[in-house]
Length: 341
Ligand code: KG4
Ligand code: ZN
Image (cartoon, rainbow, N blue to C red):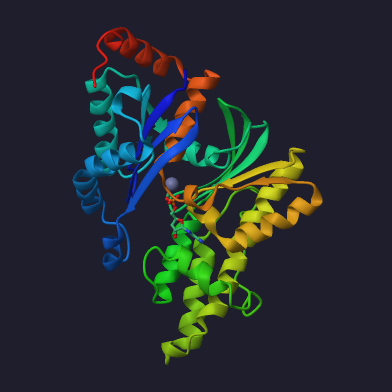
């Protein structure tokens, strides 16, 4: 019998639910809270209120889209962290209530681990070990993934996450939040060699990142050259130069980690993995024998499909912690007789 997973993601500004059958996505509904644009960034309290207003509608629409009913579901999963606490609580408690009312097992899922596996949604199998770069608005982490339950953190950012740097530089250039996709679009018609912004380097820590230096250097560059007439900004050239510095250091450090560990499989995920410069840069290494995995673009930014996929992996590969096992067994024992519609 197929495992039907109903999954919820609400860790930040996306309210999302998904239905998966044995890890294959049947439906995935994502609603982004665009109203944060006018504040120039996410307002946590407003984000959680918006989740409360939308979660039930999104969940029901997703179930409808899947063509299945509540009776078909075998497992409920929700993001348990990291993320904005108020936003997390909405999705997590909705999912727990949903599971409880149907007598279904519930599992809390890690958001970053789910990004990491999003590269493999729809793929036949996952081969270990691989190097994983998770690069989003909140995190920039380089992992050595050894098995379903064993990851080593090789490197991490010392300050801003790469996506955060994109959003802050976009703001300096007068662009809306989230600025990552807008800078990416401008960069495609710009000259990456227009100005050399510094790449992130931390002495003695070859796999660690720092993006605040690049961000500050864009600020000084703008102040020095365009303080008089900001309308003269060559936006696309600045965007392309900034993008070259950020993606260059992400790629260099990831490839160094792969070389040092003698690994040829690389998985790049998280919101910034949608970036065209990053994708093109990594693709160059395919010619050198590397296997590079990216999520489909819809699974790069936050979505519930990746949460459901990760939950299914935990089920099918037994990589559930003792605590999670105890919770699930308890749920099965209490509710296996009382499955209702
Ligand atoms: O993974 P995600 O949806 O949320 C977090 O877990 O943080 O990532 C959102 C981040 C934002 O900073 C956004 O600007 C960035 O991903 N982003 C991009 C692109 N698309 C989204 N950054 C660069 N290029 C893109 N195409
Ligand atoms: Zn994310």
